Length: 195
Image (tube, rainbow, N blue to C red; front, side, top):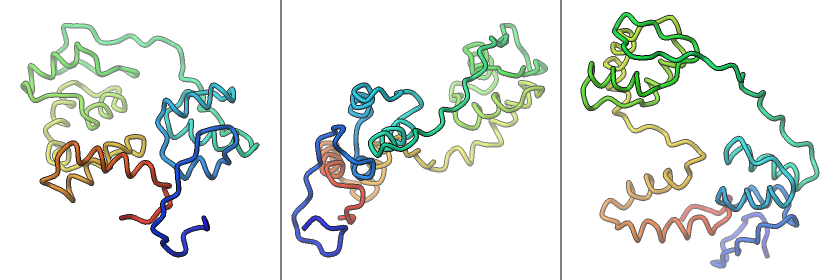
């Protein structure tokens, strides 16, 4: 019984309770919400920041009595001066510029109401200090075809990835059916065969 997945018995394992008695490997076998992981982290005195994947890795290490993964270095706390209105196409993007409301208003005026800070534009603003806002507008137009393609949903958004995949396989499925399928999916261990 139990075993590591030789034959299918038709009986599903029950999801264990999330307690300090779990091993790190068992923690990693199951889907847990961020709230559940946060509760266990509080109980164990494990740092909760850094996102779900980082928290899960820290908890797995702590449950196994191993060293906790290194925390990322703290971000510099030095405040960076942000662009203020008025701006124009010749305005140079300073290092540390955020995707601010000043930029949003100017880009919307230049590009139209379809403008939004997608991944391409966020990266351009963050990584192109010294370039101009006119360069950013050209970048927006140059990346529209790529932005229109379906993007991979990050691992931290497992629910969204599941729903996208489920709806692709069940185009006529209802939201209720999709949510029922999600609840059944997350109740299974991650190493269970796909159904």
